[in-house]
Amino acid sequence: MTVLVVHAVATYFMVGLIWVVQLVVYPAFRFIPAKEFVAFESAHTRRMGMLLAVPAPLEIVTGAWLLWERPVAVPLAMVLAAGAALAGAWILTALVQAPIHGRLSRGHDSGLIERLIASNWLRTALWTIRGALVTAMLLA
Image (cartoon, rainbow, N blue to C red; front, side):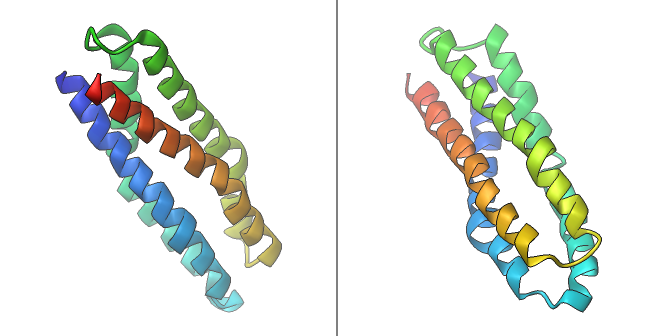
């Protein structure tokens, strides 16, 4: 049960963070002046990395750990579904969000900012689904 509780804390942190990013942080990119954007993007990327340094790996490790040491009442299918959502979120991060941030690190681009916001909805949905699945695991 301890692994599940630690996993839940990490997951809930990530769920809260993705919603703040989706509703506050990414839309605020629209208001950063072009001449200040590269410095802003650099600071954003660095600080986001520091913020994620503990909870993101913790969520991954404890999620994998639950495959071997899950509470008896928690169905394996639930753990696998939550893992698939997590894998999907990180695949999107690597294949979509990170490349957009890479391009934005070279300069302001309104089209890319809109693409960043729109494409992040899927990651937001995946982490939200994870939050619901982890809640179901805790209640099982």
